[in-house]
Image (spheres, rainbow, N blue to C red):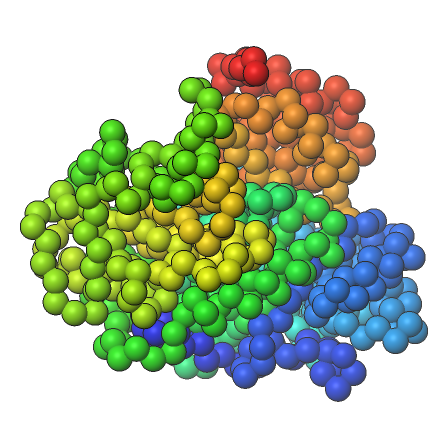
Length: 590
């Protein structure tokens, strides 16, 4: 099974076209030869027609090409008629997508008025109970038929009306039936989506796209690779486009880094026909990040370098994450490789700038100076030798390859020699002649290093795209945290808000961070409603979830333990819960 033609040369995946709306009147085409489409989602109450129109126009103004609106009830879905009519009356023909969870009847209403409907196979015809049950083959097939009976009316209407669908699975929100046979796994996510695709195909309906979202970039990458690999196996007429996104990425640098790792890694492998960067910020702020991310792909990839096509036989499994095995090497006063933490090196200039400002207790600190390391610099295109497995290696700066390609090639060549040398990753092989803007440097470094870490390659990293010394050091640690390689601070999983949200996500996220951001290694999920609740926060330690207007439910893992807490008390009750479970420490005195 393969998910791309070459691990080294950029070739965009060939897909069929999915038509969303009337392209002659502002609609768009996803896939085929069309450029990657950028989309987002409004956050207001769907029953507030004026606010929905206003937020949609604001997104279109900054370049959003598809706008999604939640439709939690039939009443909300019916009001999409008024929203769409208001937009069209204002000359705005951007395609509108209805976001559906739990309510097939809402989907049937919404498809009358919008160009596209998103459904989640995990909850379209099921209410998740986290029930453990063994299904016989007959029982399993009976459940599949029940779900198909619930979904078929939407497919028939979408085909009749010329609409598009998005089959969007989310990590942690799979149905109990899928969970009990496949587990909460990428394989389960793919099978769940393929079930719904088969339902569509039985009605000769093909105007749909897939998505495979997770808040963990490595899981998200694995899911999309596996999906595309399975589609390739199923045959050339299964060439459906995919929508890329890291769900609940959060805000600020962390949200941008997670999104860049997940989305960027796949774009650089030629996967992805439409994207959304999900941030816990005002949604128009997502669009420039999408544009900046797309703009980096050409310079981070290459179309032809003369390396043989590789679809199998890699020294690692691209469909199942495992860190590359390596020997231990000295890394300053520390060890790298051999299962040790991925280390952070800095240039001497960066060290000289930041060292005097770092306190003795700081978690973010240089772990070695690159110029002082015993590191062998290699051109992986030709023959080379290394003396022993404990020799730290990297790619030479003058190698005229994109960094992702060069380091993948180095890992392959070492494997061919039977070598387990630890590898120091660089975010670039040519130091920028003039500084990148910090937001662009962040994206470029995240894509390069994050892609390689998601492959399992890398025992140490060096960030040079960011020219400001302190910011480059912080960026290195933030990339490692986002990629799941280091945990030096609290990790937050926060949804980007929508019309279902039962509290102000941005305000509450800031309040929770103010109380908990010193809890190194603790993961806290902040979810606006039950849709993004116990399932989609997946592996968080604690969860803060909107249960009703003004009421919050608190979770430990996927289990709700406190219910209907008044919102003005909920942050402190969350702190109490963390204390009860032995995860609380007092913040250090400055």
